[in-house]
Amino acid sequence: MDKNALNFASLGDDFFSPIETQTLKNAFLIHKNQALYQKLEIGLDDKTLLKVASGTAKFQNSQPIASIYAGHQFGYFVPQLGDGRSCLIGQANGHELSLKGAGQTPFSRGADGRCVLRSSIREYLASIAMHGLGIPTTEALTLVGSQSEVYRENIEFGAIVMRTAPSHIRFGNFELFASRGQIVQVKKLADFVIRHHYPQCLGKNKYSDFLVLVIKRTAKMIATWQAQGFEHGVMNTDNMSILGLTIDYGPFGFLEKYDPKFICNHSDHEGRYAFDQQPGVALWNLSRLADALNSLISDQQIKAALAQYQGYLVRYYSNLMRTKFGLFTKDENDNQLIGDFLNILYKHKKDYTNSIRGLSNLQNLAADGHYKTWLKSYQSRIEQDKNINREALMNQVNPKFILRNYLAEVAIRKAQNDNDYREIGVLFDLLSKPFEQHLSMEKYTSEAPDWAQDLQVSCSS
Image (cartoon, rainbow, N blue to C red; front, side, top):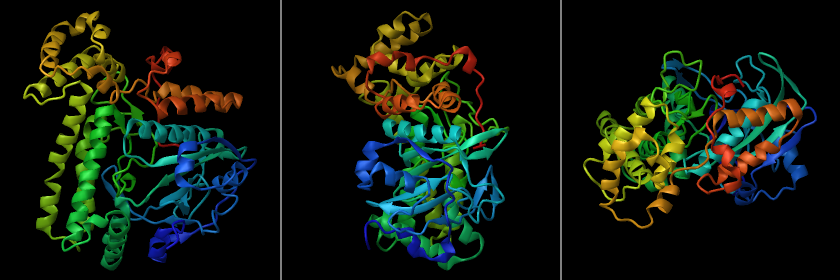
């Protein structure tokens, strides 16, 4: 098969509907991820790329399609969902290309299939922020603006993000067919995913091995979320990637003042998807995927696979946190030491990212009396390792820059109010290399100013 042919289309009509994208008025290219563009080997000039990225022209004559799936949303099963405002438009160098905001599909459920500029800016910046942090994620290639009016709480301008990933298949794709008793389609989908994305599982126990690897990848993704202070906000099963990638950036948020109960989505009234709930929710979601695969995997195999999640998660998270704290050997008291530090952050409303980054140079914290007793224990502990590269190694995993909510809001307001898109480029460059010093950009490490303390994010986009 041609490396640019859309593999997903080979599954057949049960899995998607062909659609026609709907053009935007006076579309223009706001930003392009140049490194990703080169990796994908797309080879289009910016004028042609804009036509493809705005839905005006097809990519290599591929037919755009919208995928159908189901999902558990806030714990309740919804029997049919699907790509309501996104579509696959082609494939480049083994990566699917997807437009988000290109108009209605058969799965839009009465909505307009559009995205507004503010949410598109957030998604575009989120994907580079996560990629820069080394967190498994879908990636955004282009951000397109327009003069098309889109009606939400107010009239806003429409925008489109082109997203890329080796696959956009979700847990919910399997749930749809399993819930309908269509076990032939479940098997066909599983065989497709294994063949294209988990070839190491091709063997006697390929379906159970596949489930184990999905569990392992998901655990690794969640561990990186928790270590770097990221909250997804809407961990529905239809927002869970079968490849263990962060997908569907809506009301996400990074921890600023450390609070394990942090809720970034103001629509999440029960706190189901609060920061400290994410590891457990991921296991619950994996259990729903396992349920959907039970025509292929025995109950005993499913139980054994799910039992491995906790071990994977703890191992990945512990290793990440130990490195973040500059602890390069294992000590049975490390968890207590790290936990005590986090308790100080919570009690005194300290910034998560800045505080841990500051650990690489203890003089940063020595002047703050809140850390006095803890620092004695910490200094004693790091002397055990005697690692001369401690500061450099810590700064490779502790970012200096994250996508703080107010930073995104500043970029959004400049774009919306002044048609000034330069701040998007500034943030993109910073977030693509968040561990570097960028000494002229210190202001971007500042905590949220007073005007931004109560910023709220919802699913509305």
